[in-house]
Length: 264
Length: 271
Image 1 (cartoon, chains in turn yellow, blue):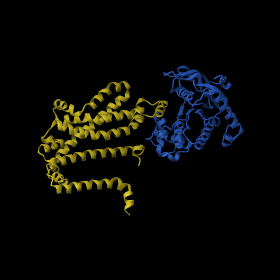
Image 2: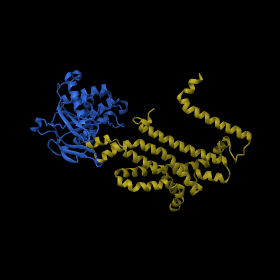
Image 3: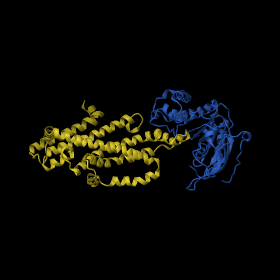
């Protein structure tokens, strides 16, 4: 009776990893309880849950700040990345001129630019958004450019034979063709936007009302409040996971009818 | 290489302006590949003609020139005596692959040429249905390309070519990737379509059997450089069916074309 249950795909894909995770937490909890490891060295799962509950208002406020910066940066990255991609496919010369500089931005670590951006832009939120956007924009730009470019040669000939205008080729051929690439870019980019937001928060170290989760981690570090640190970390992970799942869902909604990547 | 066969231009075209006239056409690519060597050819209205030859003989290049997708390095192509294809004929093309838009349904794919011409949906709807019926796909209008077999995808591609009611249909090795049964069926369907409609068809193939079965005339081409080796009428009934495939005349003509091709390659290996 047990064997067929294990072989069931839903059990394998969802239940099995969940059980593993639960076992891990259980062993963590029990062994550290037994060994009486001090909470400022390694907190037990129960300590982290307590921190989440006790400091919920503080953490929730910070979560909203980080979420706001991440989402704004992500939105800007999508808009700017897509626009530049459209510009790039209009002419090879434009792409050849600008691509090296786009790469230059990408390879420069954001932590290195962040202090400069923070000096230049007085508004902390805006500064953080710009930093995070700079990290997130690149995958959208490259993926969308690739997707707009890599159209089937035969289909392009077909459009040409039917005297399609540049606009028709763009909207009816290049854009639909780029969608799978674009969604691939979104999935990478949403995670990068979060990383960018957290890293630039570290650099800015802004407290008060604009204190995000990264600031809470820094503060908790200074105070050796490890349960709070883990709680903030947990929320950041949840945010990243939520964004990724949302992008996967979007991709599925738009591509499930025709693209191989979304076939069962 | 030693046997140079003369190219006969059919006498009929001396009186009527041919639909496609090729004069002294050459094609040399920037990398030095000599794709086509000085070529003269007439295709009359209403012909169903095959360009037969090994890969690299420039038959697809020539077809692309007929579609105005490729320009000759020298010489000229004329449609009904004019240099402008647009004003002279309604042309449609079927490619080696079905080249359907994977994100669109079969119906939307077939409607594309009409959409690109800004024809109202109310008008195009019936045309699309007619085209789908002509290739036997009317039940699959709402399906996506990936849901169809290779042969059905090719049929959809054919419907897309027919929807504009072209008078010139160019086909570039359209059934090369299909299994033999499907291929035979589609060849018969093409022949039938041609006999029912006012169509001129130029069909590129590397299959001798396909060329002989389909065509009223076969142009045999040789490779390196691409050139015309022979230009022959096919002796066969107007309405053709499976019995023609097994007839003595069919087999005799096929072996004749086979010899011509072997002679042309002159013992050189070609792929």
